[in-house]
Image 1 (spheres, rainbow, N blue to C red):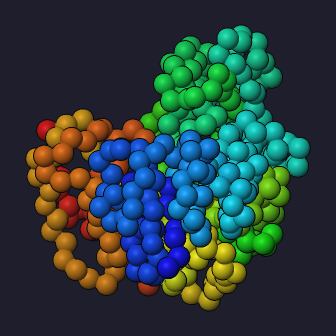
Image 2 (cartoon, rainbow, N blue to C red):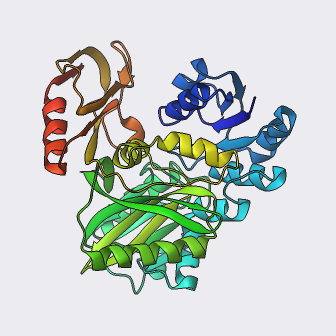
Image 3 (cartoon, helix red, strand yellow):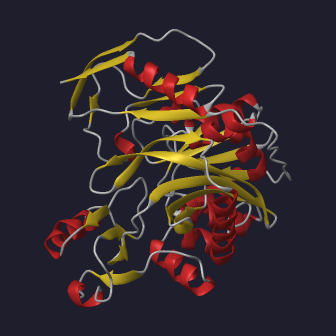
Length: 391
């Protein structure tokens, strides 16, 4: 029986664990202790911090694993790279993983390779910020270099807003520096992709539903995303440049873009599949199980990603508008083919947070349709039939 190490036991790793089990694969789930749903599903649980790559490498050797994978989170990507390099497994390299997990390293590579991206500055917490940002124009984005899920990212419209933005970075980062970049006024969109053996297997652009907090936070996605052939070609060219710049190979890719004047600017690329129902978006759109592809790739299989199927679909996170405790959950939807999934992450009596960043989600809804318009219409209809009371 093949042994697969899955990094993380949260909402976005649960489908990986379930699919691996369906495939007859022995699942070893690694996570810090906590109230994570993946623990109950795994064949074996290892209570370790997924960023401790030296310790995880020891465990991987002891367990004689055949592959290592995650979904929806950047936290463990460096560890995956370390284990893949040391054990000769299929997956992202340690060097590429470090670049994909650090926005400064990433931006430097983009500059070096001529990837179209926003101008930026690297700033230490003890440096003169006003001096360092000379030459950049407002609005700007202040980012932690090592965060995910939109944490530690704030839009700044004037100098008076920097103190709060830097404090937000300090609250989440493990480094002594951060990044400030110009905010590109344009339309945000993304793409899911996979690169294997140096070849881009597919690239699926998707639209993003964005919640405006300190900065834009994705709360849902949809496909297809209508773009002209010229823009699609430009986006794929920038994507390929960014992949080459970062050295990404044998991994899923979660790409964030900004479209301005029909030109694609690369915000960042993650060396893993996207969160917020993006793996499901790929699965529904192309008609295969993307989680199965991720697993098979991690086990070293050479894969094809057929693109002769195109089912429009849309998704949205369920969110709370306040901190509190869930008093009731009522779902008036009935089962029907175009409602793909309604998931509640919490139950009555659980405490939840007012939505601010991705991890504050309390569930999701995924729908499909003959056209994107019908998929989106069904999404809003299904959302309207869900009542969650938080007090």
